[in-house]
Amino acid sequence: MSALHGTRVVLGVTGGIAAYKAVEVSRRLVDAGAHVVPILTAGAEKFIGRVTFDALASEKVQTSLWDESSPIPHTTLGQTADLIIVAPATARLLSDYRTGRSDDLLTATLIATRAPVLVAPAMHTEMWEHAAVQDNISTLRDRGVHIVNPEAGRLAGGDLGFGRLAAPETIVAHAERVLSAGDLVGTHVVITAGGTREAIDPVRVISNRSTGKQGYALAEAAWARGARVTLISTVDRPDPVAVEVVQVASAAEMQLAVEAVNTADVIIMAAAVADFRPANPADQKIKKGDAATPAIELERTHDFLVDLGASKAEGQTIVGFAAETNDLVSNARGKLERKNLDLIVANDVSEPGAGFGHDTNKVTILGQNGAESDVAMSSKRVVADAILDAVVAIR
Ligand code: CTP
Image (cartoon, rainbow, N blue to C red; front, side, top):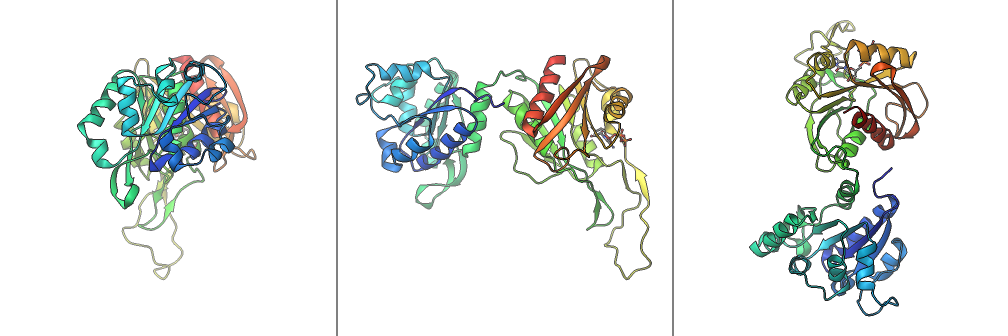
C-alpha cells in the first residue's frame, strides 16, 4: 500500500506557469489514498481556477488568512498535516519560507507545522541559478526541507533550459519516500529486470516473455523505502524516479553489469536470464537464400546467481526468482539451496494473471529453514513491497 494512504497532505500552489501541473499532482495524491487540502496563493489563482481544485482535491481550496470560518486556520492546517507539498514553488515562496515570513495562508501554514515539507521549485533558468535562490534552497535543505529539483525542458515563453517543474509522478514518488517507514535507508539495492536477448545474428535474437514489470516495481518500491537503487534492465520502460538504470541485452552483459555492483547490500535477480544462447552467432544477417533452413546450435550461459550465492559477503542479502510451470515450491526450494540464496520468489507463470507481462502477480516467498509465505494475486507493486518486507525481516 502507498505510504500516502490515509495521510493528510496540504498541497500549496504558488503563482507560476507550472501551476496547472499541480492539478495532476493533486489527482495522483488522491489516487494514492491521501486526503488533499489545497492552498492557492493569490498568484496561483491568476494561473489556475480554484474550481478545478475544488473538483479534484479532497477539500475546497483555501486562499486567504481572513476568509475562513475557523478563527485560527493559519495554524490548524499546518498542525493537522502529515505532509506539506509546495508545487510549484516560486522564487518568492522560497525566500519567504527561508526568512520565516507568514503573511499569507501558505507561508503561515509552512511556519506553523512540524510535518515534513516537500518543495518543488519551478522558475526560469536565470532565476533558478541566481545565488540568492540557490542560497535559499541550500538553507532550506539544511533545515530538513525536502527539495524536488526542477528538470530541463521547455519553460514559459518558449525558452529551453533548466527550471521546469518536476513531473507530477516524480513529485508524488518523492512524497511517498518522505512518508515511508524508510526501512531501506542507507541500503544499496541492485535489481535486475527483463528477459535477456541472445544474438542469433545482428538482427535476430532468442529471448523470453519477461517484460520487466516486476523488476521495475521492485526498483520503485525500494527507492520509496529509502534505498539507493541500481536497476540493471534489458527493457525499454520509463526510468523509475531517481534510480540509476544500466541497460544491457544479453546474459553475458548482465553478468558484467551485476559484477560491477556485486558488493551491494541487497541483490534481487528478478530478470529472466537465458539458460541457453546460440553457440556461434553469425557476424552478418543470415539470408534465407543462403542454404537450407539453418539449425541453431545452443550452448549454456553462465549462471551468475550461483556466483553471487557462492561469494556472498557477511550481511549481504541475495534474492533469486524461480519462474516455474509445475512443482512450484519444491523446484524453487531446490534452487534456493543449490544457489545458496537468502530468499527465492517462486512464480507460477502458468497461473492466469501471474508472471510475464501481467500487471498483477501471485508468488510464494521461500526463505532459509523452511520459511514460506504466500502473496495473494495483487499488483506487482504490492508484490514488490511484500518481497522487500521479507528482505527487511531477515536483515
Ligand atoms: N539466473 C542467472 N543466470 C542464469 C540463469 C538464471 O543469474 N544464467 C537467475 C535468474 O535471474 C533467477 C534464478 O537464477 O533469479 C532462477 O533462474 P531459472 O532459470 O529459473 O533457474 P535454473 O536454476 O536455471 O533452473 P531451471 O532452468 O531448471 O528451471
